[in-house]
Length: 303
Image (cartoon, rainbow, N blue to C red; front, top):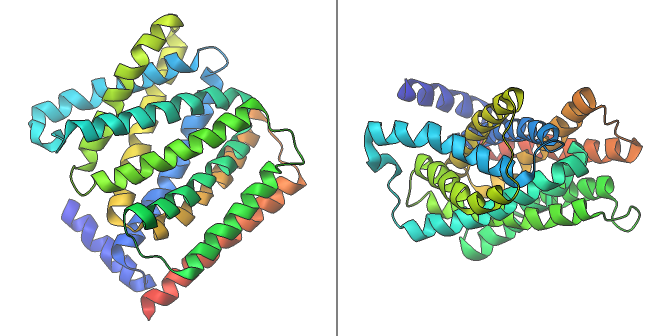
């Protein structure tokens, strides 16, 4: 089944004139962004009733409970890390990022959460060049820069008050970009399955003491939502981990601007967050950068 899917994907990639690895990376990154915004919507809803430490703990514990036994029975070698200390450090960075993210969700509209999250793409791009030695092209920098300007039109620093939620989101963007770079580096040593499992495992361990401080027993409805957010997270992590494994960061990162579109749509229909004119303009700029990036990748693939 996997080989058949690989063959089909290669045929589609060659037909549209894109390198197969980058094509798969882009598709998986778009799916990951959609799942991330679904994750955010559930977290935003639960954040009104449950402390973010508890949400992070329950989500991670459920993920470990789902994945760890399955992989141990199927063969522990699939999730055996090359070095446990690498996964430990990655889990520590990810824990800080995700706790901050859940804390911000009830305090910031989803489209703004997505917009501020875009800044992590710039940190990741710069870090990939400095620390991972990846080559990049000038036009990709232009695409990221224009997309960043579109996000800044939405955030409007200096014109709109920087609330604590917005400030913490900026910190989490830096942490998420660091986590993304570590995942990219770990993909050369460990399988994506190992990274997802151990990242969730260490997040559970790190948040357990904090969860006890704000402990409450979730209701049946809350428990179902916690299971749902864990399942959505598994899909989001797997797709992004494979996207970074298969494609270059320079090709994958611009497509994550689609999160803004998903965030605006979900925020409007579920939370009745109505974007203002500047938010719409910023979203259009982001959308144009994605279209340009796709067309440029296709043209260079043909050449």
